[in-house]
Amino acid sequence: MLADIPAVGKNRTNHVRNLHLLVSLCMAIAVMPRVKAQGADPYAFWLMPAVNYQISEKQYGFAQLGWNPLQKLMLGYGNFIIRPKPNFDVNIGFMYIDVTNREVEEWTLMNGFTARIPVGKMLIENRGLVWNRFITNADDMHFYRNRVRLMLSFGNASQFSPYLVDEFSYSFNRGDFSRNRIGAGCLLTLCKRVVLDVSYARQSDRISGKLNLFFIMATVRLPPGKHH
Image 1 (cartoon, rainbow, N blue to C red):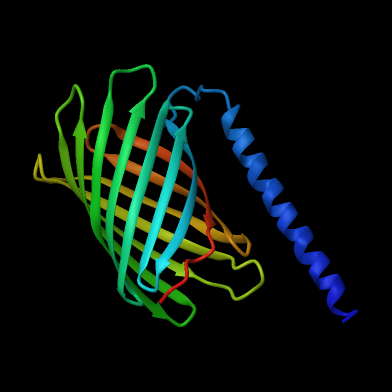
Image 2 (image 1 turned 60 degrees about the vertical axis):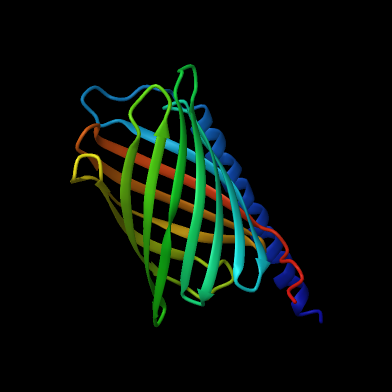
């Protein structure tokens, strides 16, 4: 019993340190000067808190808010997940995007699938989404987005999982591959029910050009419901 006490204290210390790091990152991004070096590619930061709830053995609910202070964007996202098989999900999603100080709103449907193939400590994940964007004061846009992610999981107390990711978008409006994002990130379990996802992606778009994207996503796993 006595031998277990230092380990518990150490885990609590690690959790506090991880939470302090998350808060520090969020504050740093919030107060970051909104200027960039001349000639440099633009960048954007997304802060995205979320909650995840297991409704039943094969059904999940996910809700997320997003704030992009540099581009003055805010979003709300909801996703209902059906898992008919352990490594296959059907995603039914809806997103609302608001551009601050502009008369632009966007209502988005994001429906698709996610398939996972475990290979030892590596997980190969493929997500396909039909992205329907209904925009006020602008033309509607429709895309197919396909993301491939290679994740490596380390079985330690912090559940540290680095990953590489590539996502392309095909525009149904123009009939071409309009965007590609390639990047890397990591998942970190801060405590039993809080997961932090930090990532960077280099975006290449036929219309808007290059963009450096940084994401900080913190998801709280709510206690699962009683499954019958």
